[in-house]
Amino acid sequence: MEVLKQLENKLVVSCQALEHEPLHSSFIMGRMAVAAVEGGAAGIRSNSGVDIKEIKRQVDVPVIGLVKQNYPDSDVFITATLTEINELIEAGPDMIALDATLRPRPSGVQTKELVDYVKMNAPHIALMADISTSEEAAEAEKAGFDCVSTTLVGYTRETEGQNIFDHDFRIWKEIHKTVDIPVVAEGKIDTPEKAAKVLELGASFVVVGSAITRPQLITKAFYQALNK
Figure: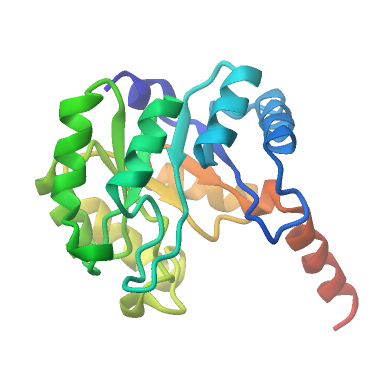
């Protein structure tokens, strides 16, 4: 799809702040997106319909949208149900990201149902599968996703404590060779050198979040280094 061509070999910055975080505000996320684009970002990843709309008012780059919502009967929280899908379609991102792990979704919803719904009701919006293993990547490709992203490596029971940089990029390489659709690098990319390396290893594009847009975590890294 066109958005994948626009983002190829580029940097996408994740501008997200949850309700408990200091920068939680659509206005602030909009300005954060402006700063990211000024710095060279080719796209923005954003959480919630209201933030997406504000960011689209502020910058003219592709937006990857998602909605984070916790459910009591599932560990899936990234665009988990049709409710979140409809919120995103109304907000109008260029791409929708959703959890495509093999974990059960809330109320027994099937991932393929959500993929088919978007393709029927908003075929112009691309679909990104947030996955953690090569098996999940393969299933996402079968389901009809346009790309997969390593967003959830280290955040599922199967990959707890791991990241794509471990053991000479073993997980990354497994995922990359498993699918024919583009593979996006995201998660624990906290230095420019790591971002450049995964691009060198074949990432379609790179998504960086906390290392750029969560100042409380950036500050904490400096604080810990000074107080060892």
